[in-house]
Amino acid sequence: MENNDYFRSPGQLLDELGITSPDEIDIEAIAFHCHATIRYRPLTGCAARIIGNRDSAIITVDSHASRPRQRFSAGHELGHWMFDRGKASFSCQESQFTKEWSRHNAESRANRCASDLLLPVSLFRPKANRFKAMDFNVVKSLAQTFITSLTSTAIRLVECGPLPAMLVSYSDTGREWFVRGSGVPEQLWPAQKPRPNTYAFDLLRGAMERELQGEVPAEAWFDHQTAEGNDIHEHSFRTSYGDVLSLLWWKNEQMLIDLEEYEEK
Image (cartoon, rainbow, N blue to C red; front, side, top):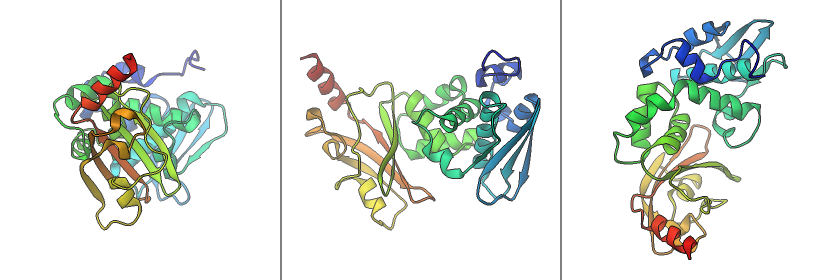
């Protein structure tokens, strides 16, 4: 499908429109460039939908959603317009924007397209590199700059930020997905369910606070010999859906050093 005349990757779209700064990422203009019109209406049962007819499409976004959510929803539907044109129309629930990140399907692909449009690495990385921490305070600052959701911004920070980190999403049933940064070895997998001595555990079990952060035992998160005796910085918050997002940062990288030596042996 990428060979069709209409197809444009997020990078190609940004280049064609000469976008060089976050304030120039006008999702309505980008959609118009792709022969798609974005309109805002009250929606029930979904956060956004797209209906295409030949070379044009109408993307409808929930007018009651926050502006960051509207932009991401529109970018998500535009991803369907690029990748899934000619298939059935799409009506996407808001949960798909937060849970479809690690699966290999049309929704995950559309999420990635929206992220690449609204949080292009070439613009995001220089701003992320200015920070010397990896927590949701940094995520909130970057999300304000790019007018994006906390989830998509946190994923981009973990993937492209300057420090070793991991983002994990939990629901009541267990781990939904996780994303590791390039500096985090593939041997490390977070616990299937939050364990005691983690803030994620407390938040999922009704802690009064919406977010908690601090140093916690690494072995509460990872079943690996090198986790014993090491700490990790955890910043977790409960989303409006009741799920918990946990941003894990190896503020002290001794565990990662130990793991590398362990694997060499």
